[in-house]
Length: 247
Length: 247
Image (cartoon, rainbow over all chains, first blue to last red; front, side, top):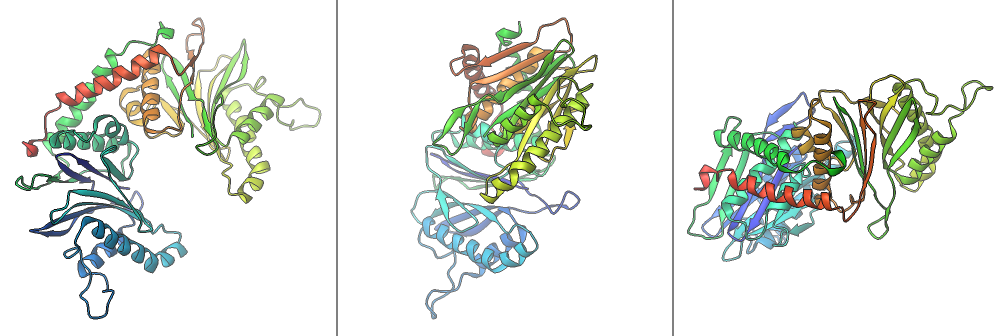
């Protein structure tokens, strides 16, 4: 299992992913699911992945080498050269669809799910920060300010806090905090989602630095956040009156 | 969709169910999903149901009329006469399996899911309060004190609060409150779960009254609980420090 969340607020973009993969509960490993697909003076394109690990790695490798050019003489099509985030999403969608087509038949013959989904976020050139969810067929949706987050993988446990707490005008540091609470809730209820967590924060303001962070299994801030959140939830419950029909 | 939760704590049993059913988003109705299957001086057996509505109704009707006797001369087998909650669970499991077998083939030919699951709770005779989850094949598991709750339907949104807040020694009125918070979280994130909610509280102490309650769409206590919980979650978030790597 996997949990990844992308949060696109006025001040910037936050992408988070856990690192736990499992092929059965007796085969659990740490794999990075948050990938920097393109980095340069004019672009930063990041993807978080959920689903079949071999298909994910195939997609990432093909994108690194570049998809076959549309005209014979052209260079391979890479994310280093797409002119917009929309075209980045199209290229990644094409890579997802083709990887699934190439390997999916062999996998489905063995009843193995070849589905993957990706969160794709970042900026290209002078374009705004954008965030997409790319489905396993290669189609995609874009995140908009009415609901400024997208999730893939084990999404439900951590969705209530995002639904309540995240708005377009939520400050970037608060969005990171809310995202970490969302991961804490998910990890408490599903063992298949676990630390380390990978976090990338891309401020909308180009003068501010991009922050990359791995939150390990012994991260003191996360431990403190988790303990405090539990305690505060308990205190909050105590404040709510007893149902009148129970008194 | 549906959400039902059963909570079995030291002081008693709480069963809750929403009432929203939908055959597509353009056909939404209110149907009771919390059923009293047997009620008498020596027993109270309650079920909450999730899944195909026609199969659920078939199961409930067959249980009311009684399953065919095992020996020709006997009376139909009903929950009014089972000698224990375990045998109640077996009888209900048999009704679920047979209903699914009888109707399931016709439904699966139309790609309609014939699966249902049930929470079955209550007491028979001098036996303890018991709570079971009955799967669509008719097999079942029993709730035990290490994790004193069972859920069916849209379970994930409302599970984190139960995981954190509910223990065997949680007082009965607090268990009701926690259950309502779990429903509030679920209804915020999934439109297919909605009020009215039906609640039955069966105290372990036979001298205390059984409480039955329908919580309507304008229930002032629930509205207050929902508003307070939102506010308290917001205040709790504000107390948690900003991630150190964001300052």
